[in-house]
Length: 247
Image (cartoon, rainbow, N blue to C red; front, top):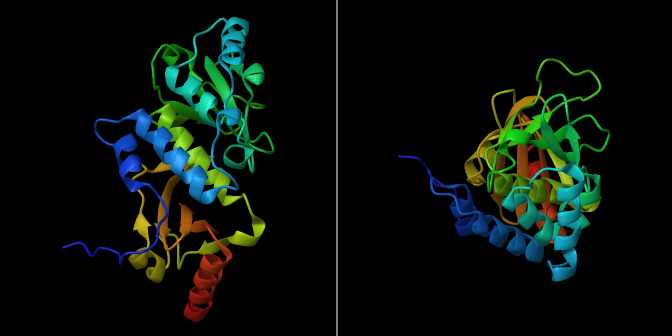
């Protein structure tokens, strides 16, 4: 029998997250998760002022000469201007800055902070409501087709974007954990943290990124090195103190 981690104060809407990524995915659940996450983990909750307008998205469609997936439009209308959830590390492009990788047939909507990675949607998938998202490590030295699958739906990708950008929202509340080897997290974290129901996915060219949470801490394990963020100073001190005790 699998040992369940002890209960903790996650401050995450796991029901919405599970519904968003389940066998019968509900993208509205992804937006519910992001709303609750913004309320509890960002500097301020989402408001109507945080969304891009229909006019901005219509102008982007006209300029590109391509449709935009429903889920991408909904994401922009929900949090497209809430930089605390979109632009702390990497950049969610404004509608007027969306562009096409014409050679590879991909619409690019997000760029890594040093332009070392790009996220997009294949042009052949733009007519779908909630299509897969692909990632590319470098547009400067293209090969035959080095876009690779990232996450299976735009709505799930924006959940990951909100989580990842929140990691970098406050230097005083973030830190790093190094595993005991290349096989996983330290035992104390592996046994107490809850694995979040997001699928594994590549970050840049590394595979195996996973999300965990416990006691007002979110943690992303990137193939052995993990970055964490506390929701409050008290939670950071509690976690940091436990980590020092283990050392």
